[in-house]
Image (tube, rainbow, N blue to C red; front, top):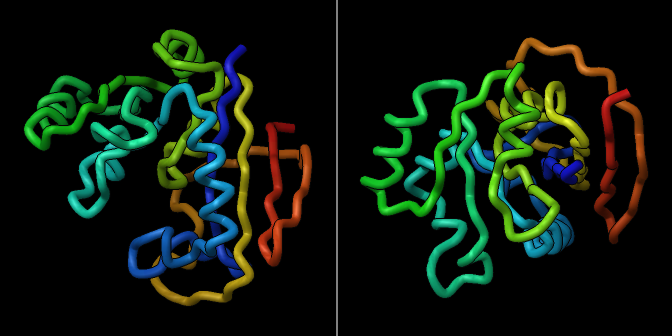
Length: 182
């Protein structure tokens, strides 16, 4: 079974974004942890919104550390249309259609350069993976910040996913809690 890690960051009051970006919530300690996960990844999983965001750099751009790391854009909508949009933007990402029922097979069938898959998406894909994917672990990094803006709510996804704590780590003022399905 493949290891799937979801990396999410939030402030102590639940904000996952500031001005629409998780970088506003992150700290240097959180970013160092995230980069460590990224370097271990055999593939990166993102959602449509992340993939098509023109303000984000290409994850596996030539000359970058992740140049040879496959990036998969998991979508519940039309993967062919998304593939065309990715190609038009010059992104070396692979669109893959999934449903909650097919998610385990989709994850198992992805070509990777290593055993660990890292999900860098927003909360909706993250929770789809957590709810339906095999062997998924959520690494929730809690920043020592209190933020209030439109991104204060964590997710609008209608879900009830029981979790249990698998481990807790403190790095400087950052706390990282690892969860799996209960």
